[in-house]
Image (cartoon, rainbow, N blue to C red):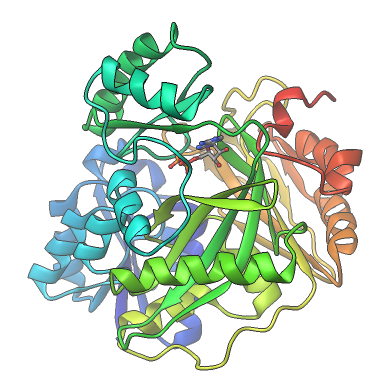
Length: 441
Ligand code: ADP
């Protein structure tokens, strides 16, 4: 592989460019006209404007992307996360063009990208699931029958859903038909697919996910797990590796379940199997067939460069034979351009930017001084990652790193993140996915 086009923007495009540079691979950035001054466009060897600001006409526009790939003569395309990263159609188009898609095969995305199909594969692989419909529910009567069987509360989810959107919690039979209708309508509009299913809603689970790395030679390993329980409206805000509350035995069986799921479809590339964990048991939720936002915490504790590994797998190389060893603890905070109290997006001109440094601190960001954060895209502008000999050192390092980080001109959630990091329950790792619902600062 000599030249890679990065079909993405922001910090993940910068992250991929860095991996390519270290591998001696040339890079092509694509960007919208709203992103002409973006860091990824500046750092890549070549950059091509592929359309106007709105994503549908640029980052999601397959013909424009493929034209840029043809003109620049790339061997491969890295989709990053979001945008087209989990589009089997895009992966197929790349195949037709003879360009390597740096990700799984289209058939893997088809088999695992959709939540209902992934559950079917999980059943086959003997992976534990929450009680629920497993398949699509077609009517209110069907949903009511399942809910009666598994008991309330239940959660209604879109099969094609993502990003924490469109989930509804029904606490009794009176609410269920209306919420199902609402969820189906939202799913149709948001994901172009009205299919919904129901499962048991857990009140205080932790979100624990396994990092999978699989090559095209049939090798698949789990590079430990991450705990992503600090979420706002089902969206992750702080992630850590490894999960602070798993014992070795549970870790081993969780990782084995995830590997079994990957193996049953012959999966290759990076992937993440997401689980809920409550009262000592874990339940499979869904598989993400791409690199995750929170991949750096796994890199920090395992020493494995996941993005380079993903590129090497796509180039046909074998993954390292030895099982990964873990060292210390790592925490990631997502820094968003938003008001820290109301969470309203707050894009604009960054008048001054200073990154923290020192031992055990990494920053993956798209910012620089005098950069104007556009309003059109995701509000995440940086990820701060800390690593320490243990969780407490990683936590204290993160606090001092966030106190050092300066982003002036726009509002960010740094004060909010600091408040969470200093909270006694967070310090004690005594949290669930509902922690932020009752969090006051
Ligand atoms: P998405 O694909 O939209 O991210 P997920 O299925 O991965 O959706 O779920 C995202 C989050 O929603 C989980 O981390 C958890 O906080 C919450 N959630 C999902 N399913 C359940 C459930 N059955 N019980 C409790 N919380 C759930």
